[in-house]
Image 1 (cartoon, rainbow, N blue to C red):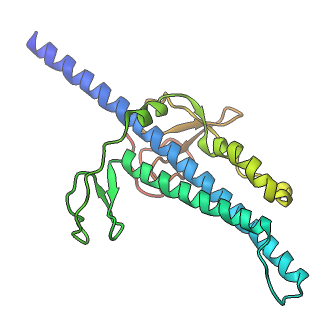
Image 2: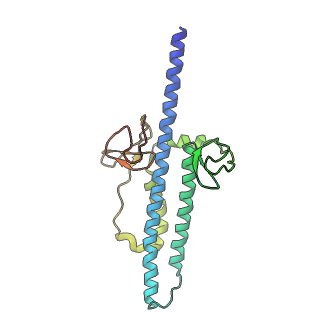
Image 3: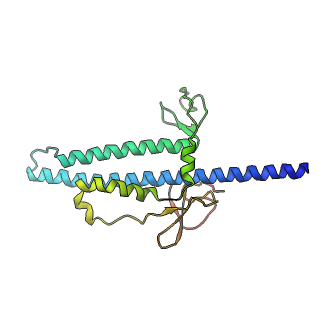
Amino acid sequence: MKLWKELKQRVEKGVETASHKSQQMVEISRLNLRIRGKKEDINRLYRRLGILVYEAWNENKGERLVLSGDMKEVLQLIRQFQADITAMERELLSVRGKVDCPECGAVFDRGTEHCPVCQAPIPHAMPPSTDARNTASEPQASDASSHRRHSEPIVSQTVSSDKNEPDGERRTAVASDNPRALSEFQTVVGEAIFVCPECGNQLKELVDTCPYCGEKFL
């Protein structure tokens, strides 16, 4: 009976650990997709800003350049999206159990009292909130597409000429109940694709190791 009880406890502990790890991988993938979506939006704004600058410069025959209201609005959006990326990158570190050094920017495990690179003292970071873990267990649309739906009405007010720009690759929906550590996504047409939760690159098939960053999956 004692042996059976110990075996049962080990199995329950293993299931709990695997479930937590799977949720963590889904959350990492979600944040990576959101960051990638923000960067794509910034690149579109860069192109729009370049068009506006050239048109203003050309109208003045290259003599002077004055920032228009559209230019200022695009610049403000770029700054806002960059701040969003910084916040999501810090959240990503927290989910992975990492912190970054405020002095040199080195990344290392949470709980380290001094930076292993520059020896600067590190304030103890709070553990990742349970709310973030719970959101990973709920089915939701790809954050890149979700972000696109929220950001497009704002950008369209100043980036009206980008309507003819070809749309990016199709967004996917997160299969949050996947028991594997490698997060699986389902396309609209039902074809399964796989995304590395570490680097965010799409994988051609279900593999044990990412060919891009070397991350190993459970």
